[in-house]
Image (cartoon, rainbow, N blue to C red):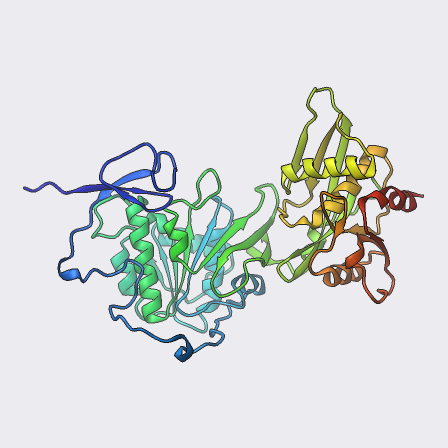
Length: 456
């Protein structure tokens, strides 16, 4: 009997090798090669692409192709629709990842139960029994939903059952296995093959597919990186296990923006939408405290207000600590150097801790100005006014740069009752905002005078 040939595929870049090696020579990743059965040779040159969905090769000229906004199917959740770009697109494949127990299955079950009243749907699970799903549905008050369930981990069975539906949920991709692939479920080859065939079915029949994916201990989606390239949309479920709030953020979206986020609250009856996210990220102290400033950030098209806390304390160490939660730590070190050079405030012998309250991670540069205001407030132990907020980017030359969406940030803060703002000069409104005093900075050297004006 002929021995089955084996090959080794890199889990990071998908490169194939004839023998195992400790490092992938294509992408440089270590210990990423996994053994799998070699694909049989296809004679006659008729090999089909793994991600293709049609055997025909049709060349279409760009000027003849039809362009237009794709038709969308509302999920019944305004927060999820916001992240998706307006709803589900027929023929799209959405991958939802997140930590265990974060609420992926809950969100997918709630979404599919709402859609079951208007379109044909199917919930395919390879890791839970029908009794387990029914128990969760009872807790979520969805026990009366007319929702078809398929408890099977075989890819072929799921493809056959989903041929006539419009929306398919697969929970999860790591539990599926294709009978044509000689490896265990969850392996690189199985995940890649199952994702490719689900995508091919979605494109061929116009089915919207929602896939739940496991994550590794590093927070990345488990399986080959090609999985994220195959699908149309990649969503991540974020949240702290000690907090009831959950955030859904898009990291890839072929049909919408990747800057939007949806905010949910986990309750006893499932995930509830949060209509005013700024309220959950703001902490109203009974009295003013030093080292606290409200920042206006912009996530996609949505302005959010959150509290920035800073603690500056004398360091007993030769190298002071710089610790951040919710922002880039290396950027904090840069900001402190700019503060020393252009404002004359030295913190080289102080430990500096910065925390963005609420567990939200902010990557935009509008945090620069409020972080330094909070650090100054903590250093001098002088509380800033409770009705103050700030945003602005700092350059290495000390200039205060403008950030996008300045008018939206000012409007959101004014709507929530804030009376004073510290922003860059180029973000100052041309027309006065009723009830809002704007202090505009052109250079960081002015921050001392502005701070004295605020605390007097």
